[in-house]
Length: 423
Image (cartoon, rainbow, N blue to C red; front, side, top):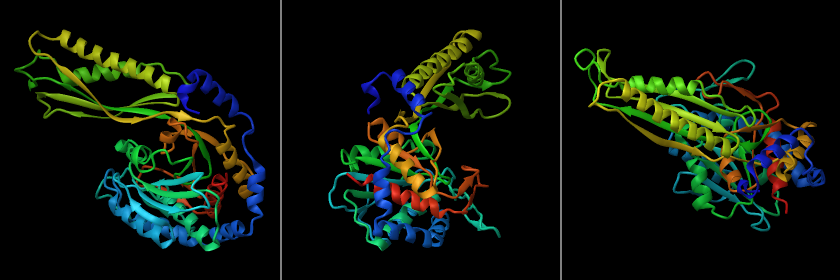
């Protein structure tokens, strides 16, 4: 349901209330029927038996660089992998997303199964993956999101081997632009152009573990720059200082009080500027991240931040002599829409019914920021799920992933895809 169709406050209250009870929207009978289908059972068996290949793919993909905005090399590896596992109409769209189709009996429903190609690590980062005696893999991005990419390919491989025919169609997507300042550019292109008005259900596979995310945390990201004439620290003393203005703004931001429900946050992630210790800097900048699971609260926080920036500028200009004046620019460098579904939504229920069938238990429900934000904001049923195993230290070069029972993640993703491709 599009968020604009009901009061945001009522919508969020419904989400909170429904998260505390068993999903009423699930249809266990569909999943039960699939579990007794010989071809689906064969696909699940294949997913388990071929897990060593899936893990090898995970390592192989991870050792190919995919720094921010430069995912094409890894994308080419995924393009070839899509062809090898029998996907049809394999192509690369204008944004760099790699797509491959697995046609069903009908084009409807069309389910997109996606995993992001990009990492947070800059060019030149060593991407060698190591494996210890227990089989634990270590390397930048090994869980987030090389695991998701490997599961994406593993699902297609198992479905092909078992000759599973789904009523609806599956489209597999290895997409760009999920991390950092990528600003969901892959998803934005997918839903505004490549598959515009063609997606009925969406699943993102992101990282390790087993979970379902049904609330997309929205974010606004800014590059804030205070500018002035600069000058010698002694000779030009008395001129307003961009670093002072930046400091004033940061101090005011640090004192903000924000709601815990819905969780709303702010963070100054990077700061910089200046030329030397004995110079008034000509500019000082910060990168600022604002987040909330509710679009209304995010908008309200944004308004407060804008007022703080203007106040900091005014105070610094008033503090010093007339004539020289500072200015401030507020460049929006990231805009991830918020969106969400209650835990009782049918797609969430399907994921939980699958978890019961594969794991014998439901999986945790969470909120987060992922590729699913975009379709959720458009009113398209969407979730993010984990790829199995257990990963930690995401976004750090010390990232690791434990493959214990990781095949359950591949099976889980496969059965979710097949279940959602039912009418």
